[in-house]
Length: 227
Image (cartoon, rainbow, N blue to C red):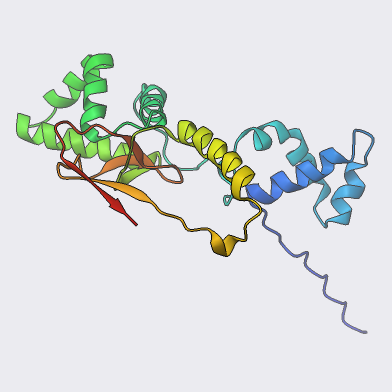
């Protein structure tokens, strides 16, 4: 009696969030009358998997992060502090305004908005020195967990949105005057200010976003360098 043929195993496929968004946008372009089953079959996606993606399409398409990940939500430990979302919102607002963000700023925020929690945290330590060091370390680890790491700031006199407007206006004017010339005839000269008094050496900035800060120097001597 011949032995039965082994059943072929289905190949396990792994999709990341970026790929899921692409499939959802492609399916949306087909219109409401398109067949979900045929679309999933044509791209070798399990029908149940694709139905789950479509059911959660608003969540996938609303967020711009988590592209290389397989899920929208992390599976790590949840924050133990109840004001976590407020503190994250504070950090984002500070960096959106292109200001310096350090652990001292987080401590100042807690002094103003969560004094009872801060007092309980400090009282639980052996002495004031250890409490202060422990608090700063806690703030740094908290910032790291939410994607903020120490980076060298790029000083700027204007925000990124303001510079974008200036850049677009300059590009339009430049091409209207010199667009007829070949690019080999263009010479770019960058004028860079150099300050003697330096601001803080590092700022907490979110990974993937700018580390720019507004110019905050006081009584600084300056020279101009042409590159």
